[in-house]
Image 1 (cartoon, rainbow, N blue to C red):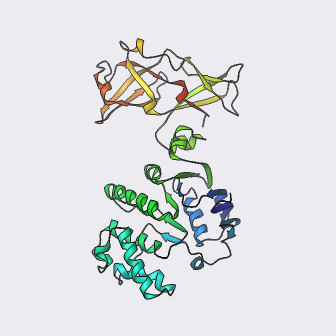
Image 2: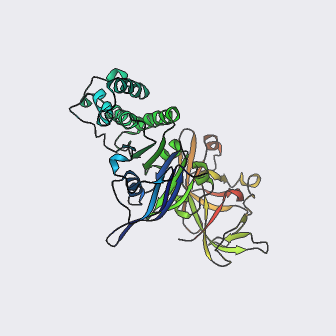
Image 3: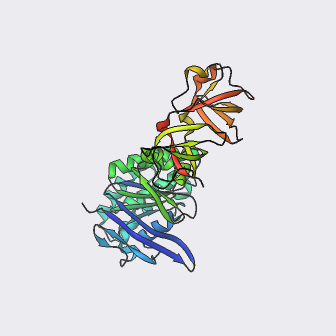
Length: 368
């Protein structure tokens, strides 16, 4: 089946600067697809090419099999919501929502019905006759969303639309966006640098880095099976432990830590060979820490007797305990465990402890 929206081998350069390079992505009809990455990674450039605000140096963009690149931005029938609310300050809320319909010369009865429908969708029916200056930031952005959806675009593009809002309001609007997406079924391309926002909103996420897409998948897929060290570090928190790679006869790989402790695993890596410098990636919540007196019953699943560490800091977070510990080679790593673990009284600042993990949770990458 042909994808609803196809981005094919997009490349954009500014003189000698490569903004995006060989960006390809298939987006399904009705999908909430998020472009996630740091500033300057190419996510907004890609979005603006889809919108028609920029022309690519090379590549294609197809909507339902038809090229968009020869179509003027105002003829693409694509909705757009920006970081700033971009409402017309001299028009009421209702007039703002009606504006794209009037430009398209829709019948007046249709305009009135659509404005009512859109304001109801974003829960702002009572604000129809207010001016934008009378609304909060969150309300203004919801009006912008209503306006962008008023003419039933097949695709809605959103460029960091919540970044100007405070955390509590962002989370409220995120829930609203999920509801609006479910109710309308519109295909959404959404740009953000906020990994938590991407995980909350998206059906799938495309992770951008240095002008390329590193990986595309659901939030769970990206978190559990990152394709690169960058994805592992950008989606969630990670510990990277240096090892010298070991390889068994059946192809399985292990690693030797700088202190000589060896860890066995069921890992495979397509390019690493025995003796190469590697990095074991382990999430903080996938590690376990035990005081020396309790360690005997709880270690061994990593294929080691436990990694000895020195406790540097202990923080109670309500639902969890956070431990900062130092390895024998003086690397600080983070561990997060359920709050009930605070009853292990042997884990205090300055104490010696053992850290362990399940070998199935470990990922192996080349050392940066």
